[in-house]
Length: 62
Image (cartoon, rainbow, N blue to C red):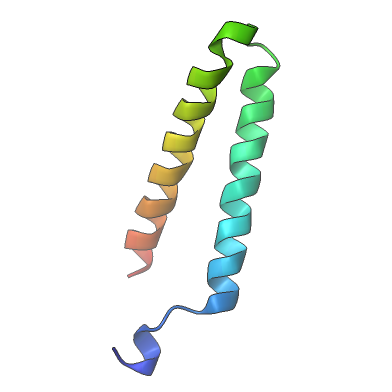
């Protein structure tokens, strides 16, 4: 692995924080209109969506 191929730790930290914030934003929006029984499934779906988008974004960077 060359020096250029190594991920930038600052960029990785920022990406992680942005992913976390997006997940929280989506969760707040969804949970505001979800019955208590559906909370777990909503959170699981949001987590999967945010993770998939992050993986897609990382592939596009390469």
